[in-house]
Amino acid sequence: MKVKDLVEFIAKALVDNPEAVHVEQLEDERTITLELRVAADDMGKVIGKQGRIAKAIRTVVNAAAATEKKRVFVEIVQ
Amino acid sequence: MKVVEATGRTVEEATQKALAEIDLPIERVKVEVVTEPSAGLFGLIGSKQARVRLTEKISPALFMCDFLEQMIARMGLTAEVEVEQTEEILKLSVNGSKMGILIGKRGQTLNALQYLLSVIYHKKFPGQDGRLLLDVENYREKREETLRTLAQNLAKKAVRTQREVVLEPMTPQERRIIHTALQEHTSVTTYSQGSEPYRKVVIAPK
Image (cartoon, rainbow over all chains, first blue to last red; front, side):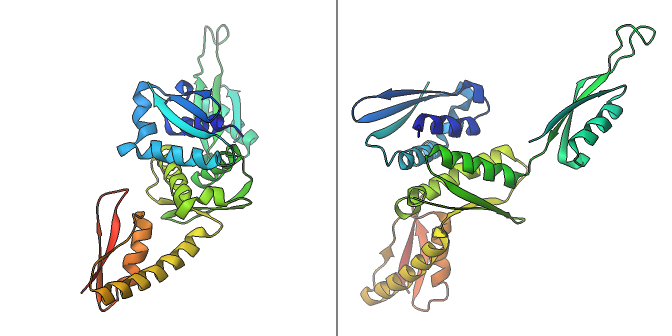
């Protein structure tokens, strides 16, 4: 299971420009950080009002990663 | 999802050909004209046939069902998704193994999933004004039972202590269950306080 694919899959469904969705995975011993990049116009679509969409993405990703030993962080970067 | 292209002397003719091939009624397909026909010189040189593309329209229910299946697969789980659509509600029910992962603590993951799915549902099908509901292993039903029992117990506590009892933050659906459960109660009233997503129900003695 790749959490990177999961984030990419969800993000592509949320935005207007799925081709501009890129996820980069950074890993160290204890954590996995997923950097999510989307088109400037789509930032709101992955963040949501008061960060509600971003929070939901994180909740789902963390649930999926529960069986892994590492903590997963999803960061939305410009 | 079926896609068929066909050519003909007119757009009409091309569409008829494509429809025969895709084997669907016209309401179930989206028609795009790829090339407009043109007569060309003397009807010979440079004449172009009409070309149309028919794409099968997929129902919102099937699209969401398929989408959720793919999402669950990407979470490393295997489950079956059933879909049920009424006028107001599109309900997705999931059953499989290790479903605790999809539910999470007090339904946290389930609610996050439902929220994402409903955002995507309304984005893909803007005409739909109904709600999307997600349930995993009948969790919603069981949770409703738990909340009703909780409501009765806390109402007793509010009466006994003559103090307001503040519940933990809940989703609108869950708050509605508490309010409804205590609507007819003779010695307490209920209201909500705070703002989403931390809105809580308060049970107050009358």
